[in-house]
Length: 192
Image (cartoon, rainbow, N blue to C red; front, top):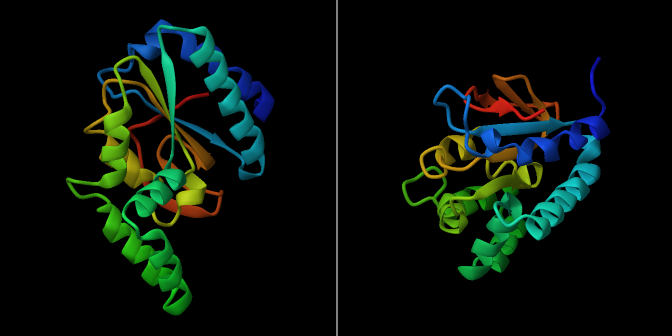
């Protein structure tokens, strides 16, 4: 019987508290990357549950901490720091959305050795953290889910990482919003 969203969300906390999950044991030498996929209509419910999990674990547990990285918020923060946010908005108004997206990708150095999103995350992760990757839908099409996972593989391989994905992940293919097919990504496990 397929579990509903409430049942699936309730299974996350026990999983996070499991020592073998946090130590990436039993994965056959694979990196502990997980995907929690959900129906996009449940976005608000999932966001609320993420806040609940962060509050519960970060306030009641000294052994582990959840660090949430909202990709969209990171993009905005980097553009603001560089003084490009307003320029990007004006570019989109004057030229096109695609030109603005291309400029943002170039500014962020996506998929390059000095990728600013990856660097932002890498600098903030510590050894006892559990990483929550959120804002996947908000950051599309600037950042594609399989691309960020592939890029993070080489720098955040010592802690569990959970991508909260508004769409479907069947263990091979990511389908954002249950409509947009992303490239195949087979290195992550379904969280629930």
